Length: 404
Ligand code: AMP
Image (spheres, rainbow, N blue to C red):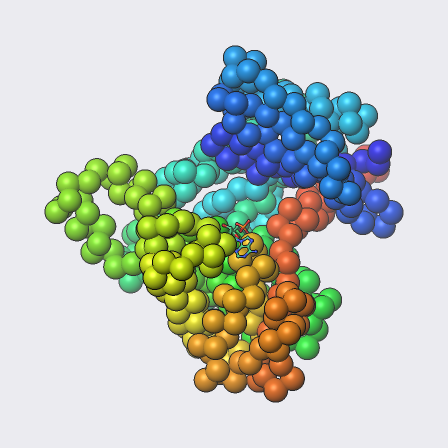
């Protein structure tokens, strides 16, 4: 097989990965999509090839694969057999790049140290994202590793969108409105140039509606505002996170309900959102299938908040030319898109019922004043593209050094 790039997204007990082959003209072809899950409990490596056929399905005992390093070893062994050699680069999805990381970055021990400082900004995700970098750096120091950040695409926000109304010293130590899902929005902005050039240079509101959900205001393909802020808790209600909420509720939970900060953290990340509101499920499919009025309330709340935030982001843009839906819900739930659009008829938004029902690319009617699209996101491809860019740059710099 050609040279490959391995894209890694590491969680607390799982590693999701995708393998891209670098083809002619630096075309990237997805070859594998898989995961190692149940690390330390029921470890299992599974992956499918580009045709959806199983490429591997192996399980071990927790004694054999008890830790992340064991899981990475198994993955390397599998990839060596499958591809015939190691990837030329490994890229890591990193949730938080803090105030300074605006570009994909080559991983070194110093960079890992700097990224460790942002653990308090994303305590549930950042340590897991950094762990495989350290292991690979120890074992294969010569292998190019690239960190790509979910915050980076939003770092060009104007200062007014980057601030909270809190004292300056907190801003300076990093308490800012970062925004997340940046790799998804960057991909959407790139893709709009191909599929919807008539809006790509205008004002577009993109809605990433998955188990995590946020929205982004894109002005000529650049992010200028996001519904998420310091952490991925703000903005839209999500599967299990509440979204925008009065900070006084947190004080109430601590002062009146006697909850510890750890308990509040667990509550905010796992017990709220669609799950908390419905008391039924965090999965929109379950809620759509349910006749329980609480399911309807949760879905109404979801679409109501999306529509409110379209108004907010349209104000940031000074007008709106396009509305884009993406991610699990955005790509697959016509009823949710319809309900959002119905709430936005005042903006001149109108869907074509048929195009929407079929999940077509352009779903607005001819009369609609705002063009509405469904654009499937591909964060891993975006990461692989960034990594290839870093790889090509470092190769050309090495060549220059040799010549000098
Ligand atoms: P993601 O995080 O982008 O993978 O999205 C995952 C979420 O998408 C799930 O929690 C579901 O709620 C939602 N989802 C996936 N397929 C559908 C569907 N056909 N209809 C409604 N929601 C869906």
